[in-house]
Length: 154
Image 1 (tube, rainbow, N blue to C red):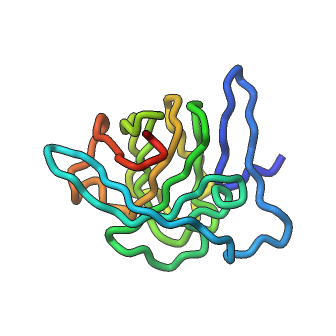
Image 2: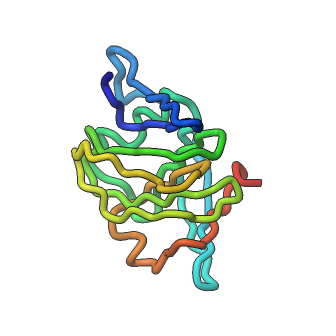
């Protein structure tokens, strides 16, 4: 079985892998919105793209050569479960913040290596993953327990 860039791992040891459609192009349209991260008494704002279905989650930030410092992508997996990501066809280093249904950051993976097929696991059940430029977590001092504020967490 071919593992795609975005994999959603179900409960009870069953695994559902999201695979790219044949002939998929980077022309998938993403809804755009704003979010904030509350950390250390500060609020950091980001303009994000929202990946809320299989096609968008599969494509993610693949094929992008740059990402503005205040930008990112929020992946909604619709339910809490362990999640696995990878960097296939992703050209820029990314930090990944794994958040539960309340928007609380439960796991962080910093500076994911471009083009790597190594699996990056949430280690715990989460609802969403926020991807931002590599180095953002350390630059802003983000940490586990911080809160992502976005309407999907309401």
